[in-house]
Image (tube, rainbow, N blue to C red; front, side, top):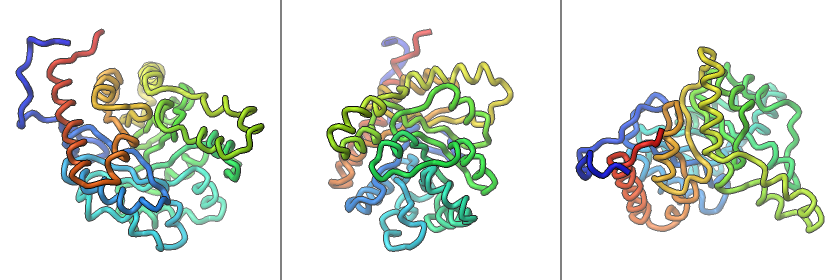
Length: 304
């Protein structure tokens, strides 16, 4: 805490960052959520409207429901709400593996085009799928499937969905020409654990510990920093979205300052809490996040 060196931030103080090829007015990302719920349309449109107003970026929840028909297209079609801000579609490794096997990779680019999205988030969730009662089974490694998608001429983000990933996986991704790594770290919503709760008691007791294995955002920041030292010029992915257990602007600011790559921070539950209600409630939440970031930037510096 350095109280002597800056005045209070004003309206002219900027948090702008160039990220994913676009200008964002603050380094805040609305993390993917609401794949096929009854609230999806309200939530997605409210979130996109606020992102457009404040100049933020947004990842949609799983768009697998749109791969074969357009019945739910309006739940996800938010380009008119978000304007020119970054907007990314989202598919899981399981869907991509199936499309690759069927020789239908064109469906991936069709989806991104249909949503007028800037690119694709590939979500990686092997533990969640394995623990889910009717979960998909992967027949290829996730990194093989990701590599198979690199010829699609799409901007690609890769994220985990709530348990993060260790240093070997991070190194493998940083060596690929993807646009960003999204942590999806342990500490936020644990989708694997939610799936476990749908099993009977015996299965839950035997397997529940698998759902709590993973890596926090702070651990992943350290993994990234060490990977940059180890890989040197072999690093191709040079942007990160720090998400998973990021409770507020203070967590986000600390982790962004600590990582050695250009970074923004992502939240899901914080936004979701307000997105079901009025847009005004959501706007006030976002304003507080932005003002808090400005204060943190003025008076807090990283202890070296």
